[in-house]
Image 1 (cartoon, one colour):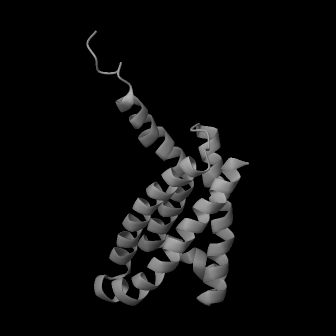
Image 2 (cartoon, one colour; image 1 turned 135 degrees about the vertical axis):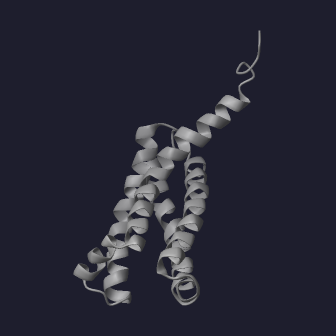
Length: 146
């Protein structure tokens, strides 16, 4: 249950970041940098936010640092993101579903797809890479020459 709650909060945090960055991308970055560069810049910022948010929800909700538990966080969040993304595109931006899915065949669309996959995977990746690294670096027996 903790992983489900963490997944909901992870989704909300990242959706909030995206809600802020989306208009900045469209109104400032696209006219100045072009759609591809603007999408890539947003993706980098979102990636940093994903790492921070994933670490925070895992700790805040005391989710076991196991691959199944942290994968569940990402899947819950992705399960909430997909309908929210489609609803936002169809209702807020006025695109048809066909047009929305056709955008995934462009460079910005591929960047978005990779970002969605990283969004879902980030809680597990954070656990595998960051938390395990921190455990090793705090273990006094690792690196000692006894």
